[in-house]
Length: 536
Image: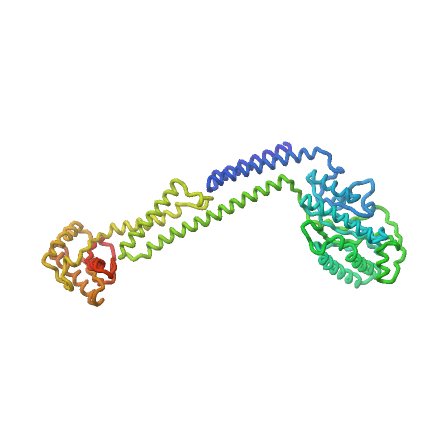
């Protein structure tokens, strides 16, 4: 089986598995299922197209026949032939591809060719030989040209092209190929950052110079002085043309600076004039022949490995980001709406629980509200919840049992308690606890009701309004309840312990005591039939 067929079958399997998970397992709103299904099909189709495009690319001629490698580093500037043969376009070293760039104009064409092959340069190694420039102005112009080309690439392709600066000069030490041997990753985008970087290098120089001369890491005085002066010269003439005082969007990313030993001295170079001006000494003429190609310094680890991402892949990522943002906003809105609805249901439930049982009117009003909520939840469960509560966050079945329990408990309680309220005006004179002569006409209906329910226990509660003393009102209500009980006992065959008597006075009003109508309702005798095992 070829790689192309294997890749196609793998994408088909991913699509089928994803669609099965979305439609059969994931409990979310159907609109979201459709959107996710379309997104998965489009994404896998795009990946399949990119794979076919890549296979077509593989059949085309690659730039300089560059083999696959972990890193691609562009080498530009002066004396490139010391590291890469003039007849060669690239060199493979330490599993990194070092591509030769002859001049500034060639840099953009090479980068464009790499981009067409879905390859990306991880960085550029710019080599400068200050001994080749008799005048500083020529060097500054050369540096400015490289800076403009690199910034143009970063602006055009929206990718970084980090820079490592290599200074190719005589270090007056035949045993030193380049310094430092180990480069620390130090990103510099402004001139002040370079000064901090050079301060760290200066500490390394001081520590190397202080070592014993027999140790291999030791640097002699001439080499240390040369490197120190070179740092000053770089800060004065080179860095100011590479990095701005304040970084901007496409300014250079300088990773490190390396000194490469050229083993040759040019006394007429502008750099040597700077050295003479600072020290008053002339460096001795030094010529040393190096056979073969030099080794590149170990700088590839300083470049962060970048992965190629085509424009189509970028647009797909943007689309996925927008879609996920839409899902996030919708989910957040749904969460807020569900939380608001849940708080409303909980508030109605807590309100019903908090109402005392003797305030029956208030409890009835609360139950009416709960029944409205119950009907709404039932409709959501049957016909589906509103879209604002979708996105798989809402489940009506989780809210219904709480409301059903409250309503059912109230209905069971009403079935257990059967209450008859009697106006005391029809039974007693004002302030009296003895039954009127015609009170038996009112109580006869109560007697029939009690005899029809012989298995029910009878509760007789006396109540008054708030007129007068509270203690006397409680005593009066109790005696009136006893009077009603005594009549029912005498008129029936039930024993006295079949009845329970209680006087509440004005402690349990069912209406306001601020007007005559309310006080008339509060002056009552309540007769309740309950189950034998009921306690009140």
